[in-house]
Length: 431
Image 1 (cartoon, rainbow, N blue to C red):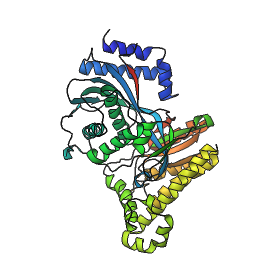
Image 2: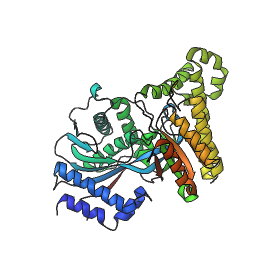
Image 3: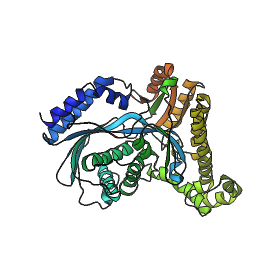
């Protein structure tokens, strides 16, 4: 029996059901959908690479949802985030050289020579940059790397606000980890090297929240004050009668990097006014005492964004306390306040002066439909893309139907929290 036959046999064994349920919960389509998805990916690898004798690995990395802490992580603040049951999935085989070959569904084949790990300006903004950056990060953390061939599929849609890039980075790290190293990397190190790849090689100034949530799994409170402190929160929204629904407004993130970067830059300019690198090292009362001078030197928007940071940081603590006390009303109130703060203080609902205000429309429609139940807020970076909504389960059908009427069929992703980070789900080496 060759590697493909052994891998497909593992996917169809009785124990596979428990593994699928652990990763995907009660996703639409259920077990049959995942078996078909995994089988097709293995067939794609066989058709493209014909590695019949090489060990094969099915490796999954989750997307993430941001629940609290909008644009706080890059200034060493606090966040509440969760891995979700959408993933980027690879069927991968080890090679005996230093070349990485990846065929992602819908994209041309990518090739990266790992013997050269220098930053390539011409690669910035590409998947090749992420692979090269993750490889460099692995070496810097004392791990081995080597070539591999992989076919990938993803239901963590690009531009969905669910961190497709972080899922991709964490997946690449897990592939290196599984194929070339006997020890497992801790979640924080994996997240940091993934962020390094995105910041330095890809050229996007992201914080660490996305990678930490994807790398850790579950619902987590993360404090970035110094070394990230991760506190798991044992809470399942679906058990309480609510569903997470992400609405993709299908507005484009193209050419918005400067908008995202301006938030971090302006917050750090306020911190620099006090001789600090980040706002976490500044006391809120300092900003209020010097508000007029800061406004004249940096502009009022920088002050408003600093105010958002301080208020949002405190809100995350309120959200965590509310969940620990099983007080959903207090939790939803804090989530809604976060959404309003992003709109009025942080100002990342739409680019300044733009008539494209799809996020604002999605939030207004959600507030009307929910009518005081659940919560809604901007999701992730903002300016375009997605909103996060917490919807009573008996209203999900109506909520989705309403949003699809506005933004088109398939705009909603109904999600659960995934309790685990990146995983080797199956291998052809299993008995």
